[in-house]
Structures are given as structure tokens and as C-alpha cells.
Length: 516
Image (cartoon, rainbow, N blue to C red; front, side, top):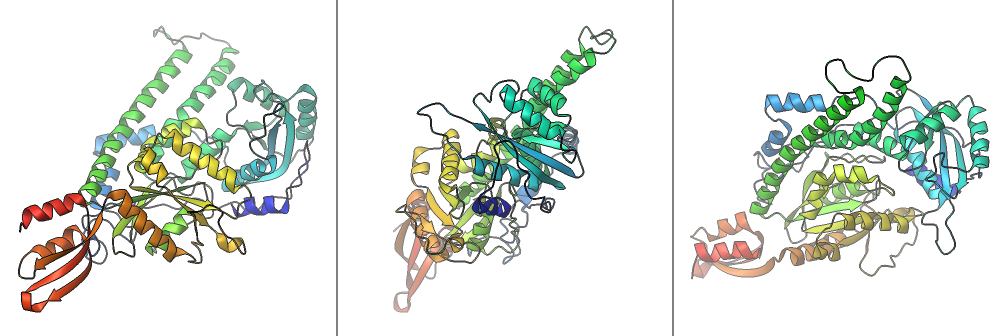
């Protein structure tokens, strides 16, 4: 997103129908593999991990046995799922010189424009540069009053746009910055402009496919591709019917279109079934977390706002590899970190949000986003150095509300203002926001203290001082089932006063096991 931010700060000089942008920057590197951190069996000082040599939650980003079970289903199911993941590329391979066309919608009287063209164009440019070997060679902002019409633009603007594209032999494809194009629109535009035309949905989906590493994420991408395949099928069948031959498959009673539609329905059903199997395994992992009573903190935010960098700073997990790239995180990962109270929490890194994120993608990744709904606390990370930080906030909150999250979870959300090092003298205007620089480590202690208080409140944990006998099993039990903050030994009594953070359920078990 650095290119995005720099472009907006320079003030993109955009003509109303096209001024060539300076040429392309180097494409972003392809996506490295991401490891799913898993849920452990012990907690701090209790967590099994690299310091104990046991399986479970690995603070170094390694995998647990539970995760390996999730990644390695039975051979038959695995083979069937791999077959579901086969598909043709959504975008052409190799170097592409892109003409970015942005429809600048003119709203009616009293209807303010929701986003500025400069920000939308800069974000679309960053999407293109995320693709390996792709670059924007021209940007054209074209006004339109009716973006839903078949050719998107009015007759005069469309003709002028067509002349510009046809007259630029260096353009190999067009990125039309709209959420979705209908199949007839795509067909008409490609015929008029003489190059392939892609919409926002296709570009974002391709980036998702590139960055998806776990089987669950790849299946979710495959599910999101189904509507695109249906749209392409109509176009392909129409092209096929212009040739000679029967529309029906011999002896089947079905037309070619009906056969392909049936195959797509069957594929969609199989993908949903495979995702249901993985969802059940994810639920088992959540149940393990619940039994061990690890508080879960979901970290959300606009794409490339610094979520992964913040989690790395809070946990000290050297295995985390943040990348300055859109949608670098698609596979949900969990990382253990200790708060000032010595309480261990799990930070869950989630998929980044985007303005005008296609609804189909949100639906397809609903299983992954379920982790947010089951968390104890949400941390909303914001990039305060971005020129449209308020619009990004509205986009994230809109998506969170669309997930129908519990009201108490939304009301207790902690807002973190990240990248303050890029805004000299920054001071938050929101009363409860915590300013930090995850990259430089500024403000992290204040944030941890805020998270400590918020987690205690959200989970109903309490701080108690309990007197226990040193000769019994009480002290070792508390170390295992609660967070021990302090032990004050009283030698003459053979006892100790132990200050602990403990949940209501654990305290109830303690009283039952050690009455009196």
C-alpha cells in the first residue's frame, strides 16, 4: 500500500478521460506460504510450545497436532478436495500493461459522493501492482451518471474512451474499476476496445487465489469463483451456438448449457460439503480453546493497515512475516502473547477488509470470519497515515455489522491507531483510541495495559488472593488452571497467599476440589 499512499499524497493528476500515469513499478513478489498457528494445551507458563517441547500452541508459528489433523484429512476426501481446487487461471499470465478505467459516478442533488475518485483509483492501482508482472500504464477517470447501463458510460464519453484505448497499442488489457460486470457488458466492452476487460471482483479473487495457502482458504476461493464460472459459461455457450451443430448432447436429453450448469451445481455442493467438514474441525479447535479458557483477541482492519505487524510486536513471534501487500493474510492464524498481568491471550490475525469488497467473497469467507464472532475481544487497527482513514473505518465497521456480531462484542471493541510514526505530532481525536507504531514499538505498553483491562472485563475474570497450603496440590493446580501473579509464602503457617487471575468456572472448580 506504500505505492497507494504515495500516489494519493502526491495528488494523483487525473484527467477526466485519461492521462498516462508514470510507468509501472516493479510487481510485488509472489505470496510466501503462511503457517496456521494452532491452539495449545497449556497456558503461560502453561502453554506447550518451544519452551516445553510439547505439542500445542506454538509461539514460533509452528503447527499443532490439531492443525495437522485439519490439514490432512483422509486420503479419499483429500483427493476429492484437490480435484475441486483445479481450475483455469482467472487472469492471463505473464506481463500485462493495464489501462485502469474508473467510472466517476455523479450523484444527484443532496446525495454526496461517498468516496473520492483519487482514493479509489489509488486503491485500484495498488490491486493491479499486487499481481506479479502487471503494471498500470494509463489511468482514465470517466464521468458517468448511470454506471448500471450496459456500456457503463454515456455515448460521447464511451466513444472518446474507445478511441484512447484503441489508439494505445501498449495497452494489453483494461481494469474497469467496478465491482462486477455482467457477461453482456464484458462482451460488448471487449469487442469495442479490442482487449480483455476485467472487473474488481475478478482481480480481487485472483489475488485471493494467489495468497490462499491452507485448504480451507483455497476452498473458500473456489466457492467464490462459482458465480464467475456461471457468468463465463453463458458467454461461452452463446459463442458455441453461433457455430454449427446441435445444442444437445447425444442421447442425454440435456443441452450443453444444462450439462455445464449441472456440473457447476454439483461442484458447488461438494465444495460446501468440504467446507462444512473443515468448519466442524475448526469448531473442535475453538472448543479446545474454550476448555483451556484462553482469551481470544481478533485483530481486524482494512487491508494493509498493519495487523500482522502489530501481532508480531505484541507477541514477539519471530516466525511472523508481515508483507506490505494487499490481502497478504487470508488464512486465519493464532499467536500467543502475554499481557502485563501475565495472562496469556491468543491474537487471531484475520483477512483484511476492502471498500466495495464483493459480497460473494464475504459469503465465501464466512467460515473464516466466524472466528471473529467467537472471540472475547476485537481490536480494530487503523492506518492513521492513510488519507482516507475515516472512509476505511466506515468500510470495516460496515463489514463487521454485516456479520451480525453480538452487540457487546462490538461495543467493547478496542481501536488502535497504527503508523503514528508517519504522522508527526499525531494525537487521536477519539477518546478511547490507542496510538501506536507497531513497526517501531511505540505505544505498545499502553496498548497491552488497555487490552489487559478489556480482556478481564470481557471474560468476567477476577483478581483474587487465595491462601493455599504448600504441602497440597492447590498451588500447582492454580499454576495450571489460572494466571498466577504473585506468591507470598508464610513459612510459619506452611501456607502462601497466592494472587491469581481466574475465571468464574475455574474458581468454582477450585472450591469444589479444595473445600474449606
